Image (cartoon, rainbow, N blue to C red; front, top):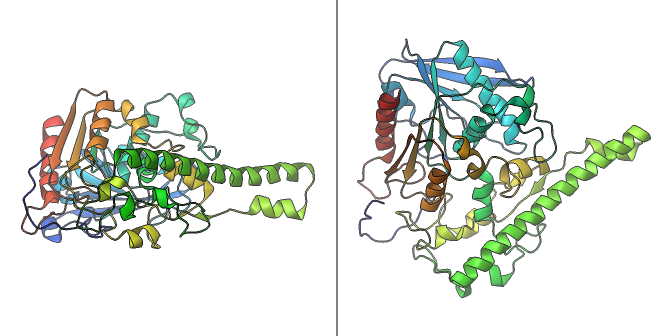
Length: 418
């Protein structure tokens, strides 16, 4: 870990997508951008964009399960390394209401197949933040015999992965890779919620923002006791179990109505079978490590990816998993049911791998990265630390831009490994 300058304590500011786009001054060298419209193997349309300067035979593919990475800050560095950059769009940009990670793999596959068809000889996947979990999941499934691939989503939907062409890739780059959206949320669930239909319901004994439990108003760091942390984490698992049960009950109700329709068609069951339930999940920004920086210490500031006001981030309209379907909850946001957890997928990483950790990240913590590295069987893995927040932005005024440092590391790694 890098040394942290001694300065007046500050708090994390809302990140969102701020700083996730490239610096236009670094894109001055002529390049082309070519859109490609593709068809996935489940019959959906997919969109990809190829950035190139001409003549490249190697490409980096980047994708996030819900965000469009068309202007990702690392595009200039990939082009400077002499590689093309492929920005793969998810089928539902900016909205993960119905996102099932197993189905999103078909979007990734469409991009990889297109690159192979264009003659690219080597392909490296670049997973940034939530993109790491998705692309690591793709890598895992692409290396399995078709009959061993996941046949159904956690919600029971056929994946069709056994019939799909999932071309393997040659390497992986993970930048600020959290341990998967489900595990991320499990660590951030506020377990003091006592009624999922009441956003303000609260068990005071589990309230992470109560001074009685060790909370201090930012920029001061909270100080939670080991006893509270143990109770809190157990209660987080219990809340996730309740949400899983709620989601499965919704799916089962619809499935039973479909079964009854086959026996005796009726209007009530037809309505139930046609209904696609949606539910809200409040209070999903309460990872104790964000408020108590003595837990798994790093260069991070007090606060979360969404800022340092827990009332806003925990109760506001913008937040992880705020609105979900039962299927998307189980596949994407459940830390107990999702297949896209890095702990489940990185044991399939046998290609060269680069992991870039931002040391002031409020979303990815040192222990998460160490566990990820330990689970990778590849003998060719490189772990680099760069001072910056989740998007690589400077933690203090006047510090170097961590994005550019990370980009140079990627250029060097691509040059030496391929």
